[in-house]
Length: 490
Image (cartoon, rainbow, N blue to C red; front, side):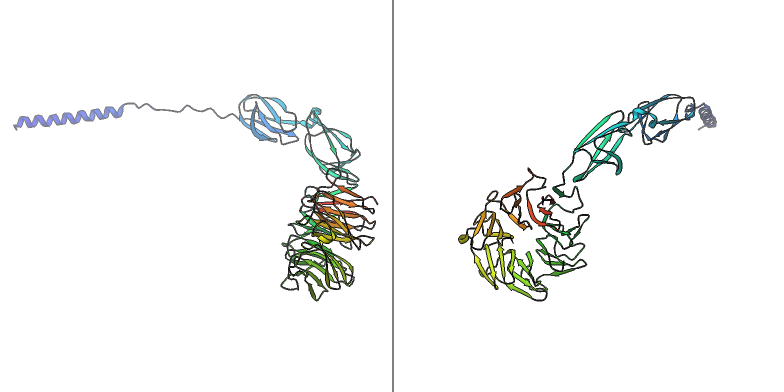
């Protein structure tokens, strides 16, 4: 390359370099477009504080639920007119217009109690009339029928009380500018009283046995809640969680001469002395069967025990077992002690036995013609007749019969499937029977009356057991409808 060409190339490179610098300088000097957010105006500082008497009303502003309850406020709002509406269940809506200036703060106090139209009326009546009235557990001075005016709206609990009628508690509603009326028919308790879970402190409605001790305390057996004590003020219970009772399913209950409570279960015997329990089973007694069906006590204090296998006598120390002569064993369900050496037994498989001088004497059903071979209970009337209760079985039907010393006299009440479960006989020689088809009384002339749910206030036709207390009242347990007290005319 010539000297001239070298010089030319050199100057061309310098020129390109200068042009490049100028271009870059020009680009960097161009104004860039800048994006800017508009300046936001300051937030409004309008404020309305809202309170009411009474409090707790939902606040609406221009028809919108603010989600706030009085007393509270609506903050950061613009100037303008605001319709403030207060709403609460059973109250009439109240609306007030508030005009708010720029950044103005206002306080709104609404006295709803001063508005006569805010109150409601309550009309209360009972059949029969004359019941005292309590509202939310506060006794008022009025009795039914009565019209209450100027009541604050809301939901109230009203209780009616009238002598010889069950207390009745009902919910009532008072609404603004309205008259709400309630009429309640009170349950007559002058003859029948029922005790169920919904109206008393009884822990279960499924009851089995019942007895009364020497202090007139009622002891009640249940299917699953153990032994229940009732002194006509409070219910309390003994079960496997809080006591040594053998089982929560109670088959029978009896009171011994020392006023101890004997309880028969499927797992042995429990004896309660008012302080603690003594328990007998196969491990610590002469019991060969722990299924206990009945107890009776003779004049010397011996306990006679009917089990699912045999008859047992216990004198407090010694256990004596008596086997039914067939050798197969039998359920002893009923025991009547006629004398020290003469007992009458009702069984499940073989009907009636006389246990005379420690010997079983059979009175077979085919020969004597009583209703069936299955006996649930027995007792004796004032004439010395021995009454037996029968359940249906393959040999016959359910029913009632008494032994007059020579023959059985049968009463085939109800349907063939009736289950006559228990009997008591009172001091007027009335015979009372718990059956599966109602509660039956035979008077001294053996004229029968059946109490059912359709002709009395008994809580169920499925009755299990009965007892007379020291005041002459009859107590009845039912299968699933609690306890009943019947006050007979004396």
